Image 1: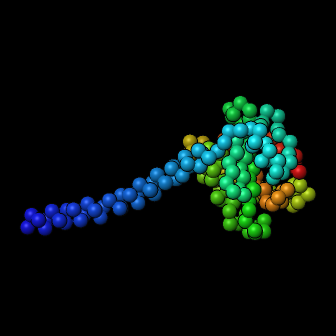
Image 2 (image 1 turned 135 degrees about the horizontal axis):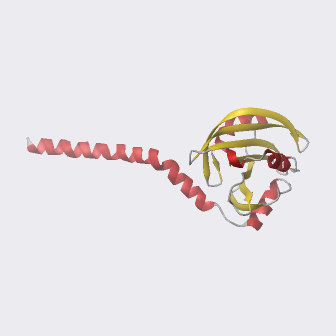
Image 3 (image 1 turned 180 degrees about the vertical axis):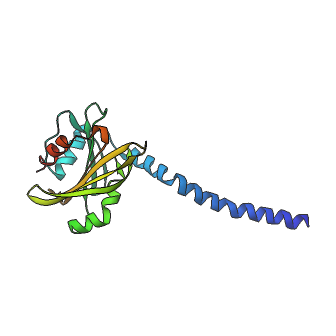
Length: 192
């Protein structure tokens, strides 16, 4: 009798271990993935600027500079932020290598593009859109609102256009108190 009970206890423990492991992966997986991705960002403003300008040309807003980059095969990301990195808005440029139309890319990927900007994570929803001309192309600006990892109210803008070597996605993100629409417009309309 004791042996059967001991055997069932062992089986129960062995059955619970995989469940707990799966639960831990589910709970901590996004944190681990975020930390791993952050370790691939390289803080080299000169290289970041060179990579960004292979995608598109632009004029930096006053006080902003290319700060870091992330490269993996043909995929490049560059983060632009104020030189003092205090306050202000983060501007993320990256190339999208999928062979799809602009609308197909937006429909399929917009929500994924805005979840992480540099080392910040966001939960946002589309608030409204606006159609403008950027780089001689009719382009959709998608304005989004939500929160960041600190539960601060944030605003984001996501857009894309065809750059030097394919689709370029621009994501601008900021806590609401730092959002500067004039600076956003200045940067967007400097894209070439």
